[in-house]
Amino acid sequence: MSSGSGPEQIGLRYLSLANQVRRIVDEHMSGAGPSLARTKVLMVLGGHGALRQAALAAELGYAPRSVTQAVDGLERDGLVERTSDPNDRRCKVVVLTPEGRAALAAGTAAGEDILRQVFGALGPGQRADLDALLDAVEAAATAAATATTTASAASAATTAASSVSRDVPHGGRPHRVPRA
Image 1: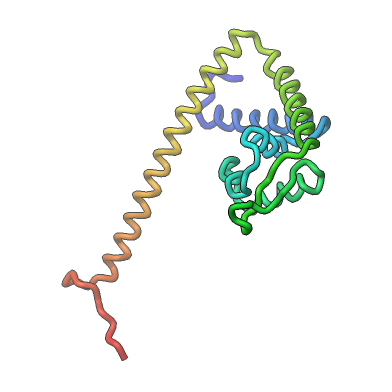
Image 2: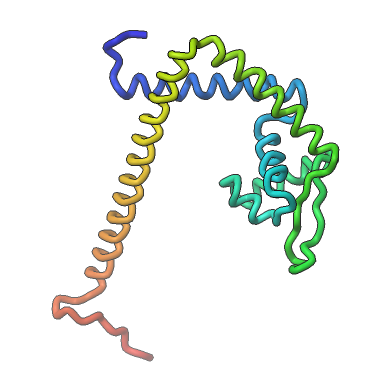
């Protein structure tokens, strides 16, 4: 690592390393049971119990269609069961099966094992430093996301205002189209 690296190079290195660790964790988990992505779905269901698919999608931050595809696969493998919501027959409720609970336990154990290997290679002081640095990166990312959202909203408002002003003639009143 060079001490002269700028924020862009460090950011790209962080993203590359995070992707590498995610791949390693996913491969390790898939060898023992469900993948990282599937384990995330099982974890939400394990923590919340039965959930409507829409609530599961919201909890995961996924598009409803993505959750439907994930649940289809988990149901096919016998890890979840999907039933009609007794309060609204149009909605589907998803719940873990006993096999799903076993798969969740296996996936969680495999994920924890590989993370212990990766981050256990660091000493306690290094882990504490990394934890503090990750807090700082998270705060900066949150601030950047907020600034980006605010800038996007302001840009959209400016664009909307300019398109309205183009539709209003010089006199300030909107142009009316005569009826035929």
